[in-house]
Length: 339
Image (cartoon, rainbow, N blue to C red; front, side):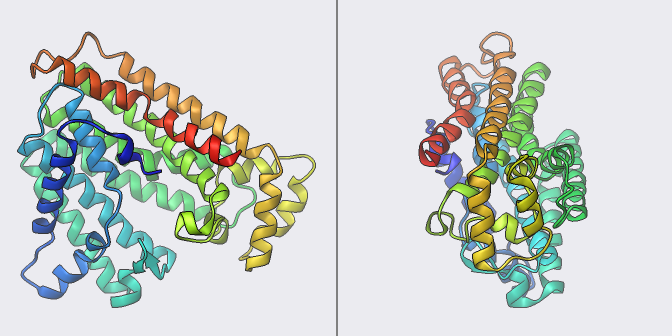
């Protein structure tokens, strides 16, 4: 299930179509090779989760999807895309979104330059939206770097703690989702209280989303994921379900003896099956639902309808209701599929 498929809101599809067109224009550069590399991942598609959340956040204030909202969505997606180019270099990834990665096709140096170019374009667009939007994106880029470093420090480590995991996903995933919902409120001209509530929503939703994604990596099939099930384990990233399985008094020691190194296919399948046999998946889902409740609570804290500024109380209420139940719907689907 893709998150944006659950955001069935009037005006969202048209807004995302405008974002897509603006993205194509944003990655155009005088140097043809730079344009080709920078647009490589964009042409491969993607969920556009961050732009969708930004647009939905703006709609939740009663705003329409105006040019400022679209430009804000373009800026956050460019930051996301730029970070992916850098991540693929760090991970020595050979593919992304079902196509050859930029670093595999053009080399690390070109891929890094393309990532830098996308981050610079995001900053250029943000400058036209106000100093607060610039500040939010700059802080977020810093946090993305922090999250990547924290994750790298614990690569293949069976000693990774839950605290280290939460610190990494807060910076690496939740920070950009939180920036998206905050900027959505800012460009919509929402009151400070509403902007802050949307920020808290994005942070909590981001935590829930990453936990959902990490459980997903273990319970889905390779055909569903588009990559091997247990891919995080293969890459040495031990997520919450793995950390909790390692703490299992019965299976934990045996799981730990197999981890801490690169695994071949049969070994990966064995470790995955052992993790699935523990209660780690259920407790991780429960943790994700706790964050989902926190996200819903953040939206519930917004005083009144919050739509008086933009005059669309019904639209604001519909958007908030959709956003409020978004993370829980992900886990509902996951619970059914996980059996």
